[in-house]
Image (cartoon, rainbow, N blue to C red; front, side):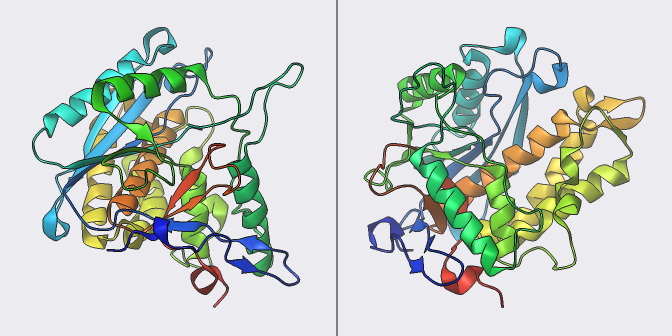
Length: 337
């Protein structure tokens, strides 16, 4: 497989009535080696004080092996006592997951839903700021959507990425110290232990622009797993909600049959987890939302390990963030058919 990070595809510009589209770099490993892929939708601040269901992290992982094989999906629900401000509980869960596969992999790739890099210093009274990567993705995404006649609700709601959350920084420090893991950079794209900044909503948007979701499906139908509050769902509803958003994404994992089995395993786990079952029904809300988003982050890691991911970042400000996504996103693949 090719390592696209070395190709000069940066800023494949499409000019016209839709503006300038700065297409993302294609990236990923140049050749396959056994790789432990991990996904995590991290609670940046340990969850909300008023919502106990948000005070969990969901760590998911699988081992990609030669011939397209994989271990069974491994899922861990991590309670965050006192909202785990030092990220001790979450880093320990990741370290245990890695330890369970010790000796079976050459690489580790983690897809993490949180801003990981920024060069910006926030001066009061300003509390948040957009990073260079946020601007690149947002502007290009809007231009690509204009090619399609508008976003029709598929657009991701991107939050300003600076300043970085202290809990995120603690997690990065612990994983660097214990596992040698570091955030992705263009210069270190081939490193064997990487943390990628993933964004689940970007994954869903990419899948839509690549035509993986049926044209008649609306964004609200795909995003039903993000139900607000604490809804009670029957088992068939859980299966339907999860299958709708995840099952079509197999091509982005470069292993459609494997991906389908992993989604089935996720559903079984959700319906058996005691923290999520209430009186014979399943509790939706954040417990469901975070598990699905963690699997979307895992998909980003799997795509990178298979040599076929894309990354948004500013070539002129490469240290001011990146956003990694699965699959090949270019003018040829993301334009209306």
